Length: 453
Image 1 (cartoon, rainbow, N blue to C red):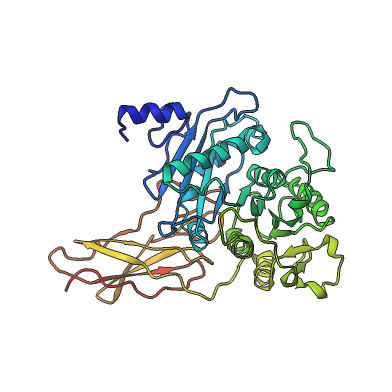
Image 2 (image 1 turned 60 degrees about the vertical axis):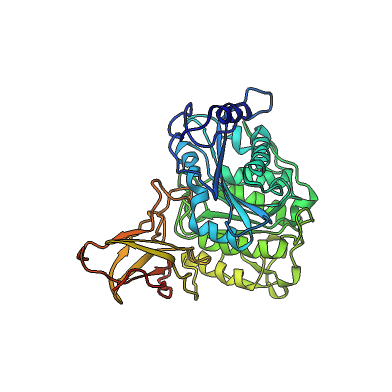
């Protein structure tokens, strides 16, 4: 990307980068374009005391139909080069965009440029400069996008592994700003737990107990499998859970029955859970305080079990129960912890803007909020002529149109909504329609026709 010299000087002076990756260390120098509604800022490593010692790249997506933003959903990767690199595509995930769009929220994905053997506590503890960098990016994005409300709106946080440490730490530091936090395979140390070598404990403010939290981990991370590489995850999660829950915290546990440290199918519970929390807590006016969760709709479950009950009928110790916000989420939770097969009864949105050039078909589509997108069916003159992609991928769970990496983000290059009809004769005009298919196999209505007879 080329820049005028004056603009180039300005962005370098501010520590912001919006295009060329010059100076970035591999593997962080390749990422998708950030043309509106996408925006990007990048900061060099800080040499100031208390500053972030790693470079960091923030990508933001803003729903095109949101005149004013009500919040920010942060999708935070884990530790190590592979996970950090995966953060470069988090804001491009169509399924997470569907959640953000419903609530008129921006979708933000950081990518911390941590060398493989470096100490990830230097970013996943937000007190080591990442909190400061995060809040700086909100100021800079406000200037870039014209959304002056960005530094003021609340945050819904999702974090994997070290990202769970970060998200949980941000709850302890800024409970008044956090709508809810989903902690996949990582939680922070919280008082009265003592510090550990290289890891500092956080204080637990009373207000943090009113922030909905979900501890989500794979069963092979110490629940049913005790000799996995990550078998220490459950003991850490259990201490965190019992500490907060015993003090009345709105915290739950969702054990993924199929996985270890990989994210698996967790998004099919995480996104509905965050949807419920956003619906309940987002204020109607920017700058207003977050609303409290309503206690009378809550359900309680067995933390490592498979049954959930209405609040009034829970048979066990409520101070050790898994807190769930409402009946719908409780039903999803009971499916997830058995086989991760969260059900869905609604078909995905119908594709739009189908355009045909010769035998090339392009379209746009939004993801199904509940179940995402698996693939598309292409019809010519009323007959199916192919699907795209032919074999949707995902090594960690349900096949997805965009595929999936270890830290729950799409791989590069990003999948495109374009299909080449190799069976169509070049001199014969045809009418095309496109249908979307979600990850439980439900099919949308056909799009409007494109092309001519």
